[in-house]
Amino acid sequence: MTVLHYDYAFDLESRAASVVATLRIDAPGDCVSLPMRAGGLEDVLLGGEPIADGSLAGGVLTACGAGWDAGDDVELEAHMLVALETWGDSQVGYSVATDAEGAPFHYLVSWIGGCDRFGPCDAAPDRFATYRFTVTHPAGMVVLCPGRITPGDSQTVCELEQPAPTYSGFGLAADPSWVDVPLGDWGGVAVTLYDMPSVDMAPAFDKGAHARFLAWMEERFGPYPYGDQLRFFAGPTYWSGFEHPGNIALSDTLHTAPSYYAHPLTHVVNHEMAHQWAGDRTTLAGARDFAWKEAMAEYLSFVFEDEELSAEDAQATAQAWKTFALGAQYYPVPEDAPAPPLLDWYQDVYGPGPMILFRQLEALYGRDAVMTALAALIGGGERAARSIDDVRAALEAATGADLAAYFDTWIAGSGAPVWPRFEVTWTQTRTGPLSYAVRQTAPVGQLFGCAFAVAFTRDTQRADAWIDLGPDGVAEVTGSIEPGFHATAAVVDPDATCLAFPAAAAAAAPRRAPWRAR
Ligand SMILES: [Zn+2]
Image (cartoon, rainbow, N blue to C red):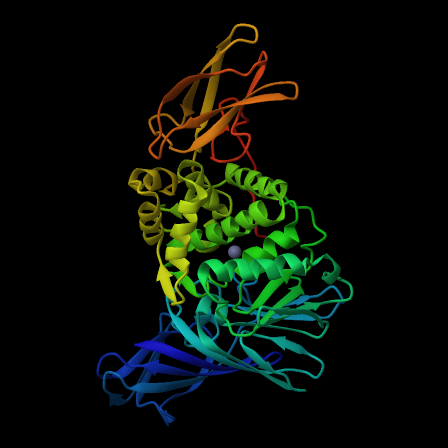
């Protein structure tokens, strides 16, 4: 059974909700089941008729009716009450925060596997559906949800015709403080920023760079997937940004708060735009595949920085990834038992993910090969669900390399990862040739493959040795270069092409939550 469409009604203030879900039946029978965690369930109907039998147990709603054949479409209707509660301190769930003007910011967020918080919903990450939201609200409220919006004094309707996954598609936001700032027509897409007077994001918003990024993405991965409208809204969000289809959330502090990124607003806006292809139109096969969508959004924002905006900005991004990686408590694909909740581990993918999946491989095989793999994964115009194994297969096809050991070593594991450390020793007579040895000193018994520079320096002079460990790692690499000066220091990986750290680095680093805005 597949849910083709959710027709969802929600009252912002009373939190009363109803859904009519259109189900495509794939096997004959007379009962259907959907995940359902919302409370206050009443009036369950099938095909407009009261159900003959049903149950709500263990977070699953089962409804039985007159029976149907494979290929039939059946409408399941239910009425319920959405709780004003979130998962931990995140905004996953339904919440009302205070915006920069002191007014209420209403936000309903599914995230991965979470749409059943709001009613019967197939919360599996790989499902796509279309949506219609009918939101009842006080006068003066601006409601933003995916799709084409028809506003009204007390009711606003959003209709999304293009199929989208539930994690991002099943969501809405409302706030009375938004002021719409038209950002122009970006190649046939009308773009609007919903700003607030006290936030004043519009002057910092580099619309030229983002219009170019949209065209850059379309050139590589096909047309913008969500119609002819693209909205950004600023609000008091938990995360820096969230990629609702055509309806992107941005933290109202992105342009003012300190960041490891050189230009956090620009970086995050492009990251969320990249998700329209990588995450939304092409989505996750399962929750354990979360790393690739963040890694891809980060990497595409980085490549655009490097090629179109500023190589210094791109370098700051790559250095930020290494900083984020240092305190990671989980591998990008955690294999801990029992499986940790996504909210506990997702934050550890933002640095290691783009480094391992893409940056390190571009250092080994070139950027063209990595971009070819990305086009195979998210281009082509068809919606799809991809796993980490699909990402490995596409990278292997594009590079010609066997990456099985590379993925085993870097991507999957249990406990806190220990990224490799390298010791550099060298000999040099005055300004003559310099002979070096680079040895992996930790972790013991596991070799890590990647490629990076070792910069031999004296004051402002620098001469690099390129250390290519291949995808499987090498215990020691030796070689020689001719710096033309007498080197006094060696810097491991000055350009952040590998999660390689110097042997003498401090042991403990703080864990970071790179995507949290507050
Ligand atoms: Zn993201």
